Image (cartoon, rainbow over all chains, first blue to last red; front, side, top):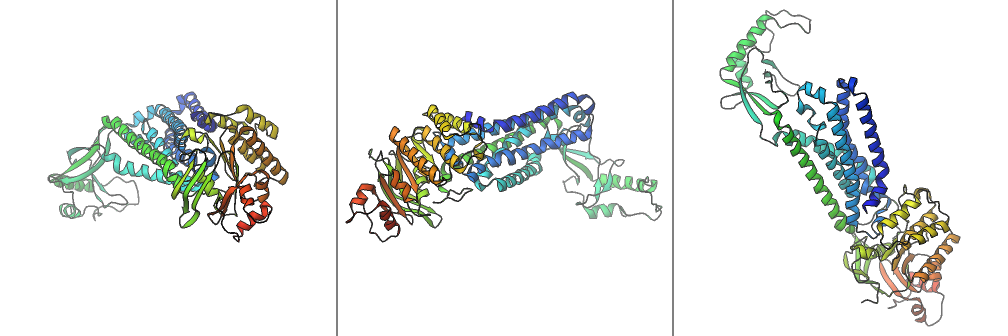
Length: 336
Length: 245
């Protein structure tokens, strides 16, 4: 059965491998003078991020959905091989090949971008597109595609759904799971009057903005200004302690120059304000230190591989049990 | 019982609220060419899919060679099946399909398959998606026969063939059956097909078995001799009392 699965899928596996080999040759040959190109680095990072989603949509989703849509499962499952073994071989051959190719792509990009990554000293910035995690993403995306294909049983809707579901899962894990896989290290720093600024983001009210601590390659998860009891600095405390903060003082010249140096009086007032706040408040930083990079890589990979394995188990259960209970719908209407 | 290849007891299959097959009880002896006849939507495909294990019954049981079909490879090897639209992998070549047959069936008869493909004039390098409907049906039948099954189940095998190809196909099937002693169950809504090669008939109407038995017995039970076609039509029109086989 494995031999037949290889026969069936070898063309696209070889094409994908050839594409990867071509990329590798270009990367090695042109490496010397392109390795300093930051835009190319970002493009390659994007490729590593996108390829698992593509794998799930284009290899995973059609694998069984195509069998149902064209009705060929009736050919496949009436050969002298159980449908369980058939499914294991199909999923195994194409899934392992796809996952291995993504792993090699990640290896290539990790190596190629190494010098710029090291110079950037921000390993967690490229966490999702380097080293091991792309392998987990690929395995999961493929299994998700197969499972969605089994449930939807039509190729195009399955491809679209698999793509969207994978992106959602990836974002959810990166946003809510990854920061909490290991309890973050907490650090308390006095507020530095010379580097703390004031401002806000598009979704956050303006408040004091301390400078991030210098922790090369660490992942700073949060940075807040809190008092000894851990209560965050409120707007009222800030405006009571530093009246007029964030408003333009009357003695400041109104100038049209955008990048004008702040006037000395404003700098002094800011300095005084931070010093006063700093008597009761400090900067609380939560971060993942640089040496946890590999632990987090392994954990996240394990989570995605585990979820992928669960999805494959679901597909096997479905094929063996549920598949016989569902009515047989095919691309062409059965004449009963 | 070992003397029946296909046995159904109270076999029922529902699709939601719609009945595909209702309370079907049958016993087909070996060595027969069984015609399964009935109008469109009568449940022929449902019965055949249940018999090869592609579907599970909603209630009741179906046994082929005394066991639940579709679960063991040794059992799958004993049954050949061609679905009504002769599904093939459109991008896999004719030779690729034969290779598939060889890889997936321990009893594969490679010389037979090669010879039959040659005789049919199929180009081994041709992708199955480029074949005509008739050629696809022939290739699908070749795959099913070359695995050397003891029971061949064919769902409307001749439906996509022109009249000449149809006759050749049926004669070909009859020859294979005679040479190998294979039992055959095949469905059709064309009585002419059945008359040509069947010696056992199952008549399905509106998801129920209306009659089942050897053709000779079905005809012998009548007060006056009538052609098989008239007998079948009479059953299909439901103006004939049920005949127990």
